[in-house]
Amino acid sequence: MKDMIRTLHPEKKQGVNISKTKYEIIRKAILSTLHSEKEMTFMNLSRAVEKEVNGSFEGSVTWYVTTVKLDLEARGVVKRVPHSRPQLVKLV
Image (cartoon, rainbow, N blue to C red; front, side, top):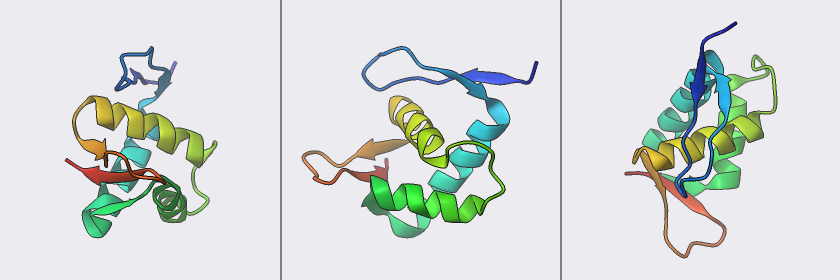
């Protein structure tokens, strides 16, 4: 069985087990995108990550971006901008 990681959730809900390799690919893409853009909507972040992994990723990029973003929020790496609509995401 591949190496797995149990993700965290900022609202203390149960996380999910995902491939550590896929987690790292998406995590790196999220962080590099937010380093260059500073703050962006979740939808634009998902699109940017999808563009960065450029078809070489197996699975739903949007699902993985959502899951990894929630994990990064729980770990204090990224945060949602309070009261933003649509949701804005930025590095802590």
